[in-house]
Length: 179
Image (cartoon, rainbow, N blue to C red; front, side, top):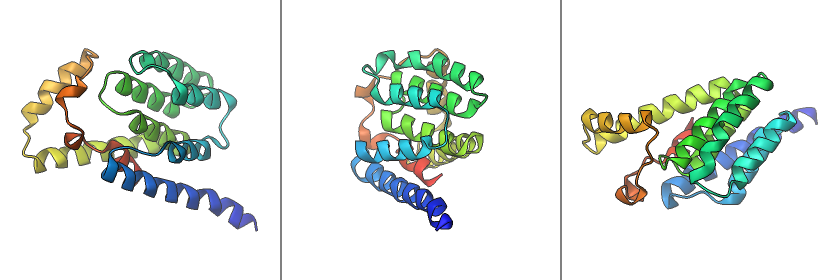
C-alpha cells in the first residue's frame, strides 16, 4: 500500500508530462488543467512560500509586469534555502514578460525546479539548449542569427511576438517535458 502511494504521484507526473509534450507539439498550447495538475503535484512537500509564489505566477494578470516576480522569486529562494525554484521562476517570469517564452513554458521550468531542484533546472536548460541548437541546424539557421538575439537578452529587450510565427518557435514546454 505504501509503495502505491509513493508511485502514484510519479505515474501522474509522467502522464501529465506526456500530455504536455503532445499538446505543445500538436497545438502549441497546453491545457490549463494539465498545467495546474503538474504544478500542484510539484508543490506537494514544498513550504508555504512556494505555494504562494507559484499561485501568484499562475494568476499574474499582465505579461509585461510579470518581470516583477523575478526579484521576489530570488528572495523566496534565499529565505527558504532552495534557490533552484527561485531561479526557475525568476527566469521563467522574465522570459514570459519579455516575450521570449510562453507562460506554459515558464510554468514547465518552474515545475521541474520545484519537483527536482537544481538537477531539474540543469537538465531542463541543457535539453532546451541542445534541442534549440538542433532545431537551428535543421532550419539552416546560422549561429550569427543567435548572436543577434544575445544582445537583446542582455539588454532585457522584449521580443516582438508578431515577427516570430508560432510554428517557428521552439516548443520549449515539450522539450522540458522530455527532460
